[in-house]
Length: 236
Image 1: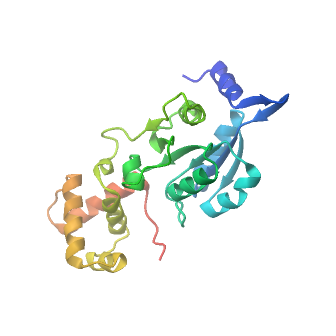
Image 2: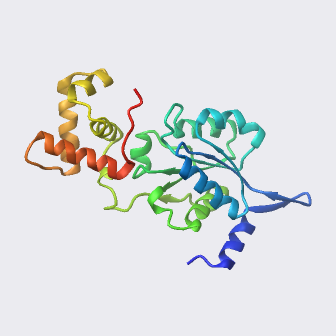
Image 3: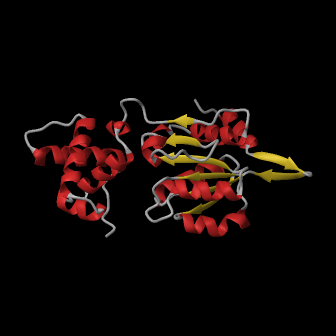
């Protein structure tokens, strides 16, 4: 339960006194969804943080030096490249002291970025786990305090069937949700229809999908993707 005392304590934790000056911790928020971006900013501002918000990685890169944040809060999928993982690596290289919190709809870090790990010390918070301000605040404090293990709040074990899928399988599901045929998926990915058919079948098996025919299973697969990520938009 979040009490007024908890909120005051969290707000105080976001401030430090440096050379006699009250210093507000700075958080750079990079999220392409306007509603989520505003929600994160308002939540952090209410707890004493100074924030800068961007919808794209390029905007964040341009302002990084001037804003000089203590923490990066970033989504993985930003609609256009670079993605959130690439931004995190780029900023970590420029400022190894930077705390990084990945806030993602992907079920886990593995499904979010594949085999490549996130920068050392990164916290990962599944969006459905942000039940209160304290969840995000605890994740931020975990990346600012070297003595604390970074937060790793993945989707609940049964919270998303996509937690069992690989990055490639999730991408195939996205294309299925867009209504693409196997032939078009093959063209988009520069591979053969046979190869697509095989990975589609493996994806169905991984999800435990069953139905009366290919069309009905395809609908179930599209619904599984939409339930986890929302309806995809065709950017082509």
